[in-house]
Length: 392
Ligand code: DSN
View 1 (cartoon, helix red, strand yellow):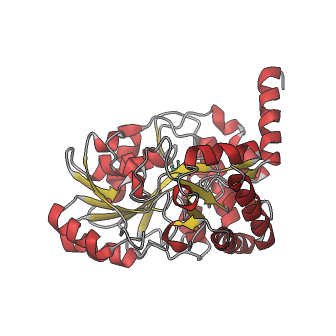
View 2 (cartoon, rainbow, N blue to C red; view 1 turned 135 degrees about the vertical axis):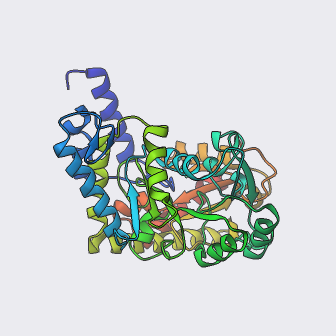
View 3 (cartoon, rainbow, N blue to C red; view 1 turned 60 degrees about the vertical axis):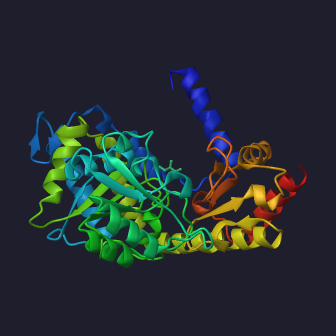
């Protein structure tokens, strides 16, 4: 590179990534092909609009890239193009969710989403996000004893509040989501059902988490977590007389975004094809096995795991309860980072502490599994975490 300053920083980051044990539940390591597509000449092209309907000339090839990405997205999740549409232009998960609300929820309408401190996401209607300013959030949470979704309580709340849309899908929920129950709840109050499968998309693609597509009206996702693609977002919607897909397309562009990032769309297409391979199924299975072992090993050493374990790629450690208040999430994450283990501090359900210094840690196994780590490595990682945090 001619730019030596940036080159040095890129090298330093590559070195950092190689050196650490990465347990960030929302990260992963992409393939060389994904990086090649991201860094390609497509970055030079403006393509406002959709394939066949662009506002700029010279889009014959980019049209093919976007169409290929769309068809791969449908194929990966076993969807018929007669029944489902997909928009591949969202720059990431937040704009994907925002485009859905913009398209389908009137201003001031109600978004029923999981509260942030219980495992939801800012864009599920939290008040600091635009989704909680333009619309009203009806927050739901988990049961205080099981720390798992209480579908009866969610149903009662939905019937009382009559939200326009119910969002299922979370950033810090370690259990299987029962999408059928969410469908029944949405039908019972006349709400749309949107599933945000950002965290579990790779697990769904590989069949190790139930698919939301049988039940949801809309499914959004990022592509860079368990799906192991570039940073991007996708919006799937059912094709029927409600014209959800057309409304969503108009909301994404021109409602919200300008020109799509075709280099990102090409990289997404590469990742979607990679996720169709048998190796990816094996990978996703291993991600879940690794998370279960990591949770079990930590439990054996006395660490309280929220909800008693995990069914997916992530687990939440209740640091405060496990250390009798000696440590909390922030300090624990800093101590681990000093020793080369990267995690994120996280609230746990009913957390009495602030999100800046919450009670918990969120650990995920997707990135280290990409690097070939298996159960035996998880045993060692659990030992190391225990050793570091018990010293203090
Ligand atoms: N920020 C992501 C996560 O870490 O879960 C969600 O968008």
